[in-house]
Length: 266
Image (tube, rainbow, N blue to C red; front, side, top):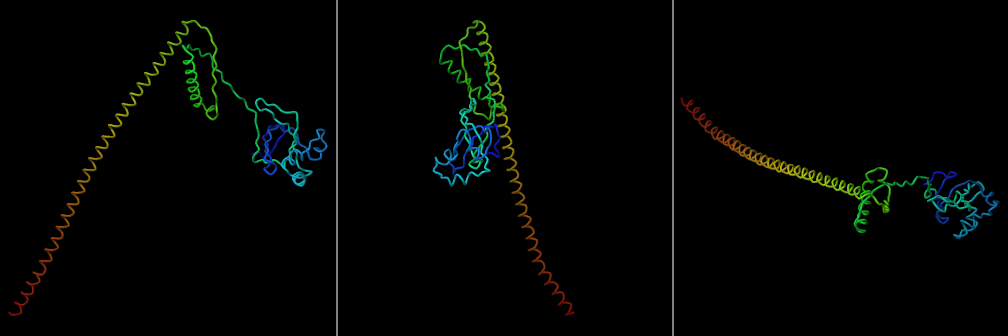
């Protein structure tokens, strides 16, 4: 998307759909108006370039281009890598441009990283090809750990030439590689064993915790059962007390009435 168009910059300019939706990669070298275009030495015809090919008549031409309409003078880009411009000019009226679909190109450096020398001895073509495939994958994976490379679609290219080195030198290099690789495997093995032991301890601790939790839940349930039984016993006892009190009260009332009658007779 473009907010504005500036001179000496490279753009991918898209015309509005009503004018064909054409995409034009160009360098903007100047601005002019329709009167100057009509009188230019190249005898450039905007109508024939943008309107006639898509069946638009002169009415559309005059509706889109007014005397004060800015017209960009551009040179077509024939290549972006490397940048190459055509000598032919194209005049693009601003009123035809869809700025929401147009965008700017900016100059950047395409860096090629060369690592050398990596000397290796192979016993067959198959061994060499397998190594090249493997080392490309390893390099890409490592590059993904670097922020400068992680966001780009990168390629790794490896070429090789035959060289002659002293046998003892390459033997020494290969022995050192073997030793380093063996040390690496041993460290990985010990690390794996350590992680496995740690995992086993974690599993044992977890099982012990689960067992303790189960015992606690069982004991807690037993306590709840005891409490429920005790509450039931207390409730039953209180009920017996209330029933006994109810039986005693009528008996006391009868005795009191009998005593009152005897007193009256005397």
